[in-house]
Image (tube, helix red, strand yellow):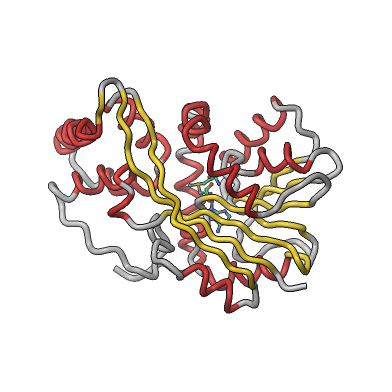
Length: 285
Ligand SMILES: C[S@@+](CC[C@H](N)C(=O)[O-])C[C@H]1O[C@@H](n2cnc3c(N)ncnc32)[C@H](O)[C@@H]1O
């Protein structure tokens, strides 16, 4: 099958994430409880403090933009950009219930930012950059909009073999149908998993002080059912793979997924490994 053009890839991303926006809102409390530590890590790596002007790329339902807005306070501001307007609707509802006056959200494509050059004190991004069809172009945009001396901090998924949390359903689907090996250059969950890939792109656009770490953690769940329901409600790329099964295969796949997840159970706790690549870089002064 022919590769989609960059514009087609972006349209697919927009449709995919709009489709799962309601699921993100439904499971918001759970995922925020499990993954908030990543927001704190990104806020720290970007050296956020009171008064700064921050850009969050691929904000989705508001992470890590909301924590950034709390950190920079009313003397600072945060702009969150995302393709998917329904994800941003949820982010706006959260910002309003948190009474954050210093945050705004705009629909837009990270590949070509409609913001002026050298206007942000920091750029942050969680789980977005690997979905972009032209990552080097987006990285050049990040370098363009950062002020001299300002930091980028970004989180992307690391290697599939360390991310049982994400790969269990994919392994089960492969028991039913053949999945072509992922094109290493196509947008997708593990596109930036390789050590040094994102760091090299950042270096190529002139950023320095580059730091990269593979950050290991676990997502904790009370049951296999909750794992299945929550992941399938929010993970658009995994939904797309699952959609290729027949109804009968889906029922059996669900049973096998829950069975696999139970191998990670200790008492009432299921702990599923995740590995996140955290990369920070600075624009030279
Ligand atoms: C996995 S979600 C992450 C959302 C949020 N940052 C978080 O960590 O909860 C990925 C987000 O990236 C957005 N996205 C994907 N490609 C994009 C692009 N080219 N420009 C802007 N946003 C994009 C999607 O719409 C989606 O909301």
